Amino acid sequence: MNQKKFLELKAKWDEKLRKSGFRDIESNEYYLKDWDSFRFQKLFTPETFEQTKRYWELATQVLHEYDFKDDLERKMWESYIDGKTVKEISESTKRSKTTVFKVLAKVIKTFKL
View 1 (cartoon, one colour):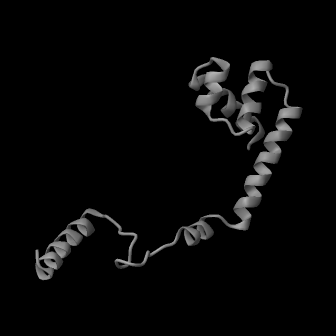
View 2 (tube, rainbow, N blue to C red; view 1 turned 180 degrees about the vertical axis):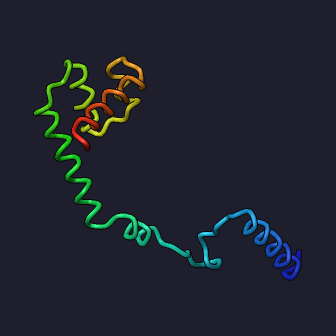
View 3 (cartoon, one colour; view 1 turned 30 degrees about the vertical axis):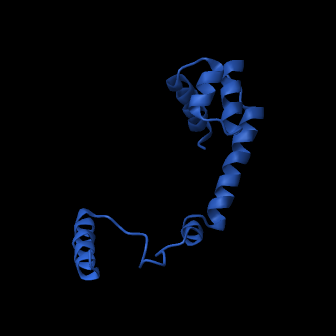
């Protein structure tokens, strides 16, 4: 295929992609439009880091001050603040993901976290 045919074919497919809503991350064959570091800086500000830090401080405080219904609920909350997923908590407590989610949601709602 010669270069002219290639460029015509590329233009045709670029147009189809554009019409479909596709957004290319490259500005040309060598450069990206957005670098990950810039996207990270836009999404995560010092304020968002502070808010996240404060959330987890409060969540840890809840572990020590909340009167959990039983040790199982306490274990679920402790696993949550340790970074475990609902699925992991479900597997370790042998309770359904729905049950785990409801327990976590109840505590979060109680403390308006």
